[in-house]
Amino acid sequence: MNALLTDLYELTMAAGYFESGKFAEKATFEFTIRRLPANRNYALAAGLPQVVDYLLNLSFAPDEIDYLRTLPQFARVSPAFFDYLRDFRFTGDLFAVPEGTPLFAGEPVLTLRAPVIEAQIPETYLLSGITFQTLIASKAARCVDAAAGRPIAEFGTRRAHTPEAGTLGARAAYIGGCAGTSNTLAGFRYGIPVMGTAAHSWVMSFPCEMDAFRKLQRVLGDSTVQLLDTYDTLEGARRAAKLGGPMWGVRLDSGDFDSLSRQVRAILDEAGLQHAKIMVSGDLDEYRIRQLVRDGAPIDAFGVGTQLATSADAPNMGAVYKLVEVEICGIKRFTAKYSDAKGSLPGAKQVFRDVARDVIARSGECGKGEALLRPILLGGRLIEPLPTLEQARARAARMIAALPDHLRQLEPGEPWPVIESRELRELIGQTRANVR
Image 1: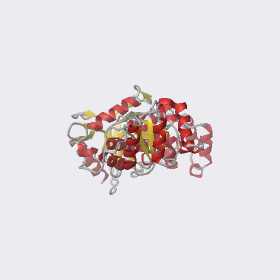
Image 2 (image 1 turned 120 degrees about the horizontal axis):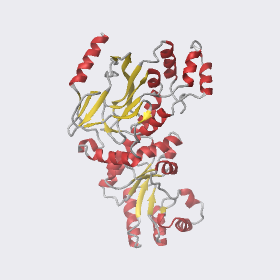
Image 3 (image 1 turned 90 degrees about the vertical axis):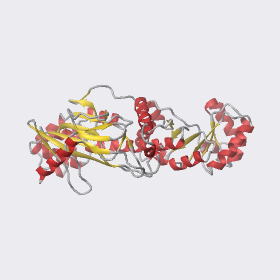
Image 4 (image 1 turned 180 degrees about the horizontal axis):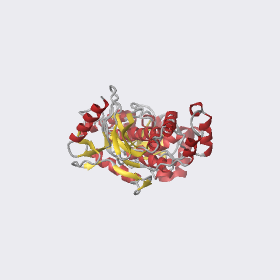
């Protein structure tokens, strides 16, 4: 795995740790949600398998080390540091919250404990990988809730910031409850159901819309979804209805979905195509979906692209990766940051969730309810297979369903109670006093 996929200051710090003789010190870092994304009542954790794969394969190639030697920031660094990089591997421990777990502000997502350089370099990848998929999974869960049982298809790869972001976004959206994706690679790589049949270019490539519909149906049979709005939506519906089956249904990609879906439904039913479904797509988000559902529009499925693949209304999350402990010769020193609005809490932690609240405790404490942070890597080795994507999706559905109704609504609600244990509060006070 390309260890240069990180910010330069991770590597200059690594050189500094090495030259200062600190490379053997054990460090514990925590990835914590400082603030929830805008308009979110929870964040749905996703992205752990990619982090695990990164850590298990983290190394420097010879040409990457040669490149670092050319940078002026490393001009005074000893050759021994570059020799150290040649054999660099992650040998530490990873504790993490399972994918599909709803989390709240102030809660750790994962804990990394390793020799300080091994724990420092992954910061950039971890923040990027977990934050992005968590944002998409959280957005997907909102769309799925708004659809009230109607399936959501993820259609966003063409609007994602990169093709790989689209593929990982499809994965995250599936964890959040989407029924499938238009991204074929995501289907192949992750086993996600794939959806989609034809675009407007298919219809426009034929001189006659009816001929386009007929040829598509000949190829796809029962999987056919006729796209109706290339020219005139209702006339397209009449042509599709006249052609009849086999077909899955039709798709509307523009216009007043409430009015058009009602008229199209009537056309299909009159032609004896009561089984044919109506899907809509085009600039949808959870709010438009909720309104269409509330209005009783006869829509069977929704395709969501741009708004989902970019988490458009909340494209970032206040997540941080902070040093919380340093261990030298078996003696621990607890660390924290105290700047205004950007403080952190000392010590490795655990989160306990029961039916009424979450408790952030010190690692090793006993608590009531489910302990969310679980061992994933010990000594640089995966201790057991990670849950499958289907298991993560099922966990998300189960845990979201258990949330109070006010946390599942689209508008901000009363926050879920998150408190600190007595032992953690004492450690916070002691650490602050030591700094003073």
